[in-house]
Length: 262
Image (tube, rainbow, N blue to C red):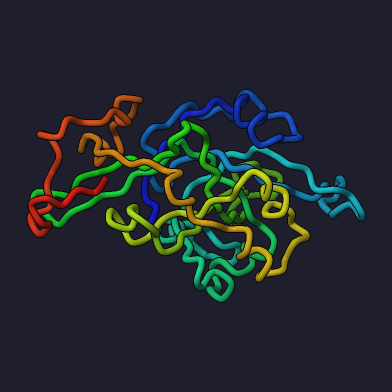
């Protein structure tokens, strides 16, 4: 699964990186977050069809690419209680087109979630598992494949900005190559030349959409052990991404003595 990641890029950089069309309001800036956890606000790149003053889609209009702030943990539009989002931080690619919580978003509300990299935990030691930071070797931005929804709070007037809750989930698949030794699931990625196809709300062909998504190419990502400070969501800062020395790594007692992850 993907349950923690880092997202430290400035929104101005993300607007350039993802070729966003619509200006981003400064008052929506959420700052760098090196320990993104479920329910936290995150940046999401989406494409939305323009609407008129009555909220109706404008015929024949082209989608507009936007940078939005959403909450991590998808709340389906039909949900009675937004707390369901706590359980829907990931969506399995194998079943996303059939699960009621995800299938409508998969058909029309797909997004990209910018990340520096993500954390996974390895080992079975009683005292805890060893966290690893998995990131692009070239230092670039990961475009995590996501889905988003917009939930309406029925207790508020529709003109109240707080009546609308934007949420998102990360799509995952079986982890491949050496990364699978840390965790058996990994987030799916969207490559730059496929951004438009993935984000296009008019593209609802499930087979085509699945072909867009890829696990990280072998050798593209690197992983190294980091401090257990990342275990506590109250801890934040770039120091969480610093590699730790070998003598501080929690070893897996069930692994062979010469077993090395990387």
